[in-house]
Amino acid sequence: MYLQALALRNFRNYAHLNLKFSPQTNIFLGQNAQGKTNLLEAIYVLALVRSHRTNNNQELIKWGQDFGKITGQVQRQGSHLTLELLLRQAGKKASLNHLEQKKLSSYVGKLNVVLFSPENLDLVKGAPNIRRRFIDMELGQINRAYLVNSSRYRQVLKQRNNYLKQLQKKQVHDEVYLDVISDQLAGYGAAVIFARQHFLQQLQQFLQPLHSQITGGQEQIVLDYQTAVKEKELTVEKIYQNLLQQLQRQKQHDIFVGSTSVGPHRDDFHFLVNGNDLQKFGSQGQQRTAVLSLKLAELDFFQEAVGDYPILLLDDVLSELDQFRQTHLLQTIQDRIQTFITTTSLDNVDLSVISAPKIFTIKAGG
Ligand code: ATP
Ligand code: MG
Image: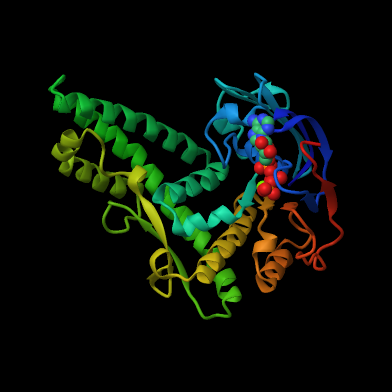
């Protein structure tokens, strides 16, 4: 799949912009603060209806304006799609071939993207919510049921937490209702945990050979899902039973603190290299290698899941990678994957492995 064209209206520092892209490599070249990352962000938001930098719609809309719009022309397995996203402070409206989509789950996934930026090191180093968000964003693109189950899970979790607070303050006394909500929560939660575990296993199949190649066969990487659900359960039903038990066990504690202490909203995953947790024991170089291989693995993962490579957004990463890793990345991309690269200079970038890129010079929103 590839993005043929992008039109922006009042997005970040762009009032009006129309670009036509190469189906292979596109480079956004420009000095700092000109709007290079804003362009990648526009593509990311067009695909995923969520920014990687903010949850606040207003920040995406050009200052002083009350709406913004992103339109993309996508070629996917022989068919043409128009994706359009209207941004307002109050929310977003997504259209597919000019038809508004009431459910975002019927829009997300039409354009698959993988974003790689220096902040991705936080996937290893950062807090658990960053890794949960990673799974949500990637899995949500290919698994509609996951999107639906995780959004229901969040709704029921909110209800449960509200009710726990009422019990805590003794405004209500009926614990039977709590059990009813807990049962629902365990149902959606089990579906979420099951899908995540399966996703990490699949991703790991692509990750291991790539990682081993980059490390010269020295290191074995494992993605280890961490959940309160004890033994690694293999069926949704077993996870449900186990999660329900945990919720029951934690019931008095949860009432006391007024929030839910177990479930996928607290889960995490670790990168283990030769059995050691990279977050605690990995060197900077090992952490970078893990993230690079993870991003490369995502490309293969999407290829297998949807029969087509996603588009790849590289924000300032080429200059950050040493020659070896840079060449590795570019060799993987070759001319098979449409890629958008931002950089302030072409000096440190060796593009000899790919065919001539289309270069866009970016200057303060133009
Ligand atoms: P760098 O090379 O430093 O990463 P960049 O070219 O990627 O720079 P961006 O992050 O794309 O820069 O753009 C930053 C610019 O966009 C800043 O000058 C900022 O003031 C401007 N900007 C951000 N949000 C808005 C907005 N909502 N309205 C108008 N301008 C905005
Ligand atoms: Mg930038």
